[in-house]
Length: 81
Image (cartoon, rainbow, N blue to C red):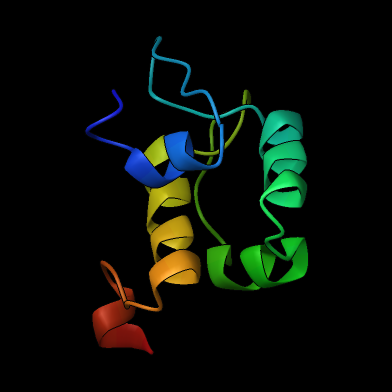
């Protein structure tokens, strides 16, 4: 899992593996604060994404964290921004 979601693990977010890789919203907010990442910027970049009831998909969170931490555009952001 660490190789699939390196930015998540870098800020200390745990990826829940079943049934679908997702992240607990409360833990994500705590980890964003600890890593000095602005939650408003995160929300703006995350935008409107499909989520499961338990929380956001890990791959969506990883893409936003990659963009915030590296400045790179990722995924559909390459075409939409």
